[in-house]
Image (cartoon, rainbow, N blue to C red; front, side, top):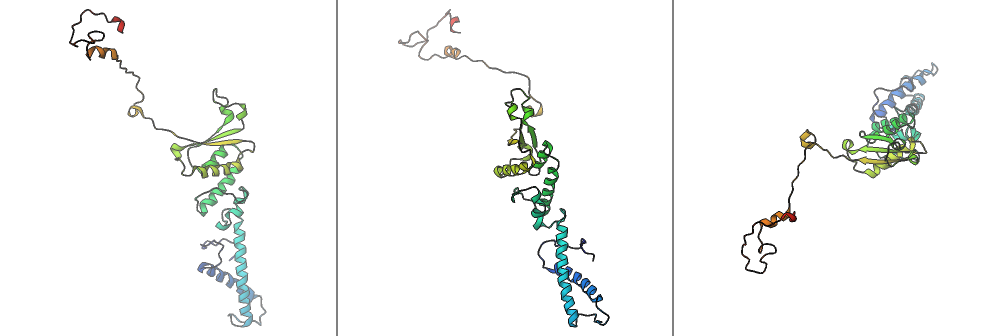
Length: 269
């Protein structure tokens, strides 16, 4: 087997140098080295089996050389971002963008974490532009993310922004499409961690979550252009009811019905 060549049959790429698969690879590699060492001996050494002392010693040397060679092979492949072993993903890839061992809180598996780190590096080299910032937040929130620069809002009348807000931007998350996060504080911390390595150093930002209520008037028919009103006057009810006699008449008397005709009530309305 050629040195530093990718073994397509290999399944275990961890740092643990043990197990059945590792022993099979070690035996296969050491046998090749043992044969090469035996071929270097003079013709007086004619043994083809591991019996004499020199063959046993060469077998031991071949085994240790194979172990070292396999370790060097793993280290060589770790330098490639796409083949780095899981145990070294941060030390090989993550250190390029994240500082002091700080990483966002994610639920990715090994391959998902590798893809996340590679996406961060790709976004980083796109520059500190709104598109890059939006793509970075979308690594944590896949949908409903938009970036709005304050200097654009300052051009809108009565927006509440002016020239002093020009070095800021808003990260808006539409919770209707993405759903409200279960732990908004941890998510905000992770978003800040990403944006701090991507945004221009002189800018400030805020994260806000937008809620929308569905509105479907008249079952999709839209708003009907019509009005409706109702008028009432409690004075009218006073004339229809006869509690304890008519107002101002027979208040202390026998309280019998009195027929009233031609009485002017025009000033009561």
